[in-house]
Amino acid sequence: MTTDAQTRPRELYAHRPGRAAGGLVFRVGYADETLPTSGTTALVVALALRAVERPGLEVAASVGPVVTEVRVSGSEDRVRATLRDLSRALADLPVRHRETETRALRERAADGGALPPWRHGFQGYGLGPGEYTGLYRTTDEHLRAWARERFAGSNAVAWFTGETAPDLDLPLPDAVGAAALPPPPPVHGPKQPLPADAPAGGTKVLWDALVPDVPAAVVLAEVARRALFKNLRHDRGWTYDVSTSVGVLDGERATFQIAAGLRAETAAAATGEFLDTWGRLRYAVGADELEAARAHLLVTFDEPHQEAAWLPDDAVRTLLGRPVPTPAERRAAIAAVTAADVTSLAHQAWDSGLLVAPVGQGWAGTSLVTRGAGEPVTGRAFERIDADATVVVGDAGATLRDGRTRTTVRFDETAVLLAHPDGGRLLVGLDGAQIPFEPTLHDDLDGPQVAELVDRHVPDELTVHVPREAAPERPDKDQINRAGRARADREVEEDGILRTAGAAVAGTGRAALELGKLVVTLALILVLLAAFGGTFLSGVILLGEVGGWLDGDGSWPKLAMTAAAGLVSAGVTWLSYRAILRLGGNDKGDPKNG
Image 1: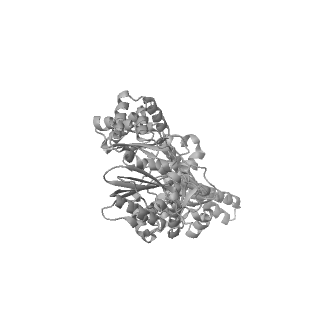
Image 2: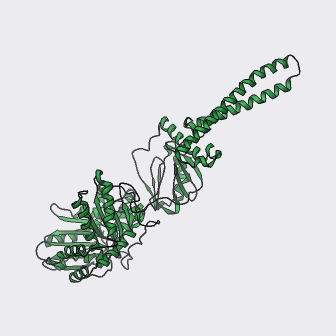
């Protein structure tokens, strides 16, 4: 359905003979979503493209942090018709294809980047690309409403390059109640100092940073690319690819990335050389390095029809309210970049960096980005039967104790609660921390209890019901026993007999701990033997005293004392036996034993 009132988008045109091209740019991206609505923008675009796709049509779309773009190339008539049909589809979204396009998006989700959540958390700029959790709960009406609001004519800029000025017919809807373009959302980042290691995985060494959106950024990227290519690829042959990129973030800042592929046999050496080469640019950039990079970037300005070449970027800048330089001004800005500009920007890129290095940690003297590092909550504790892990749930949130690791998600910092039909839950914090609740992995926690303890604290708008084929299988007896022994060993080391025997033993490392265990065990064995012998001797004496008492010789006080001594000896024997089992890890896997 098309709204009665329609607002035409601003239009940019540049002359270029030959093949025409055009596009629409909207001020909407994945940073405008939340985790429970993530993927909405991508699905709207996919449904609209489904309505205009034709064999041989060259059309592409991309959803960025704050800008969504659609580009079309071909004959002038073909480009005009496609942009017109696309606008109609956005105004009256073909939601009948929602299931098919949702499936396609999920299949491509694995190709999305895993790094943004480590910098921004599961919110705003950390939600993409490829984060589509919200597609499990989106509805036809929600999609239509998002299209009407965010893909409106007042929220768009159109551009066209061809031989004649276009007569574009773009029946985009008017955004109801929208007086101005929505500003980009605020940028959230890690709470810990940067630079830091981000355990995002992958097979590349990657440096990710935020820098000001200035001409020196592209110059720094080219200087870094050339230096890394020379050292890692040309001189040593340690990598097959070196890449750098500078991208739009919020109009004020830009994303800055440099990366190099790793080979397993030289990964460590290549990572070290990567960081040495990149880190050096903070202090020195040679005149020849700067000149070579600048010359490479300026070559593009020698190509004809510069106004047309820069028009898509002009559309984005117009949409974000940024200055739109002419090609001559762009060229002059790059030519004016100095070595001091490059080293200064390299310092900023280093200080705001996240390092992904699949081989080792702390390469740049950094610490690991942590999740769920807040204060543990107090509440009811539920032990897992498959691992040395315990979930504690209170009114403020939940804490997962996995061995000696603690992960906390507070309910007022929840990004999403994934709810499964079998009663399982996954509580996800804004910083990316995750706490699972799986009834099949607990003896004392079922689905209704999870709903009572967790669901009532999380607003409905943050809950996403996610189907799955089956809940995790209940572990077998051997796994349960192993988990119990692991829990018992840890408890002994943290709060058991060795701590009461003396903190010195507990603090000397694993070797000293095992030696301490051996000494205490031998001592307990001696006590056990003595106590057992005492029990045996008391039994012999007791028999004699019983005989004397029966004969009436008045020995009943001796009888009572002998019996008491036997009971004490038996008690010592039992306690020593249990302590030896505990130290030896043979306590049948039951954390409640002993």
